[in-house]
Length: 99
Length: 218
Image 1 (tube, rainbow over the protein chains, first blue to last red):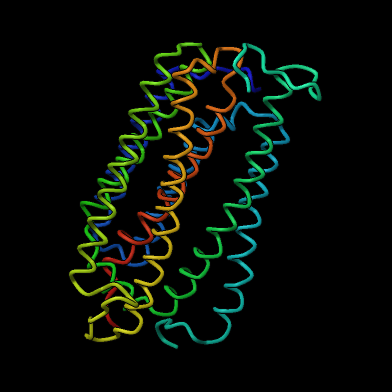
Image 2 (spheres, rainbow over the protein chains, first blue to last red):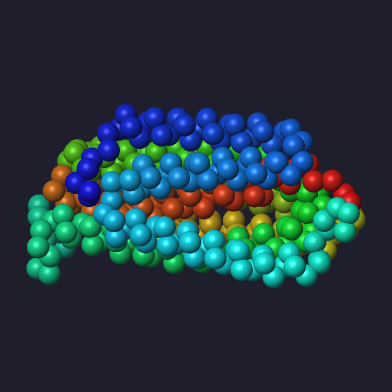
């Protein structure tokens, strides 16, 4: 809950992981992985974002009410992207190979 | 306000409840911020899927090294912010001031790097509305990429600037002894804002600097 105090050591571990992931994602961008470049970059970004939210922003130790707000923020964002893209991808505008 | 140890307002039962309420309120605000930036990320996603080749060409004009460095600088800043919150929770008043000062220095370093990058792009003639003089290939969609780039990094930079103002306020209050182990909620809440700014950049960095580098024509 809110009385939990995160130690400097715990912060330092998260900090190091974040720096290593930043190097990893930059290094990965030098390779031509086709469509996988996007997937790799976004998966690493999401791992980094989750670490920041859970530990730097203490959501891991927060009340259920706060956790619901965090999850719903992400959910509305997903809804925004999802419903917009269902329109865009079904109009035949996208340069898919073989179409 | 709150110059004494327990700044408990009368509508709350205890300090813990007051702190939970503040945290909840801040997260509600951050949820609206997610959607504020979300509209722009959605716009980016749509246009990138429509014009992948032009976005690839445009992305290669950005400096991968400086993009990476500014990401690291913001992460460092976030880490020192976290240390400031820890010092607040353990009641180390001078440490709060020191950590906030380091956090602000990294934030300023981030803005300096970003502004020099913007200046570089301006010199290259890639700033839409000011001097866009890039006329190769699918240049209209390259221009679209840069419109989105300057809008999104600009909105982010304005958040960094506001963040510096908030952190400076906290630094002054901490130096005057406004906080203690029993009351450091403003530092924690400012920390949430600051980490959110880092969070947005964690997505801006790959989307603008990384994922389009190998997109080929056709």
